[in-house]
Image (cartoon, rainbow, N blue to C red; front, side, top):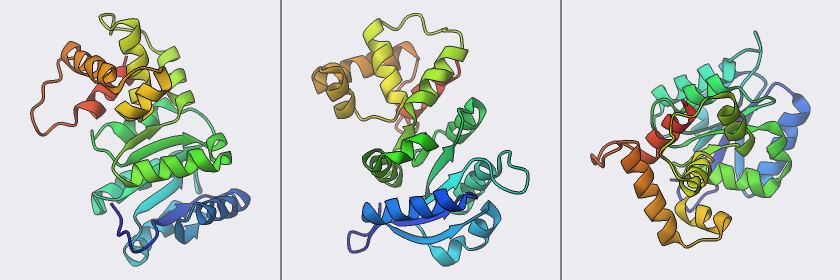
Length: 219
């Protein structure tokens, strides 16, 4: 959660100059402050204490190997600054990275395809949700992950599966209700049923919503 007296502070790592500059402009239009923008992850990591951001936005693949620099930097950032929101951007759906991003069970994480950043509203919504501790997954990432995996969650009803998919996108109960044109109470009943069917008891410590999404994506 950021101080209401100042705009949300973002640090950015993206090797494409055009996309990097475009993101800075989009963040500015949304009322955010880009405190630093880099062409690779190491520079972002080296200056993280100096820049003191609320959110880090990183490309998944950056120099020098163009493989998983952004993911490794995200993991390191969360070790150094546990409360820092992290939003990864990727040109392609990379299920392994999405799973690695969420495996800690913590919130404040997101994974979006770069095509999504063309929409200021969607980008602004993702940035705000991640910075507030939410989890955001691109709908295409969710769909393609589901298409590549078998389905062991056969006990879920069709409606529960719809609710589960929207949960995996990072939507709140209110957001799910709006998407499915049902009441929030109906969503809450479906979510409770999903938790019960997945054996996720309310221990007071585990983030059951994130754990449910992980179970869904691991199918």
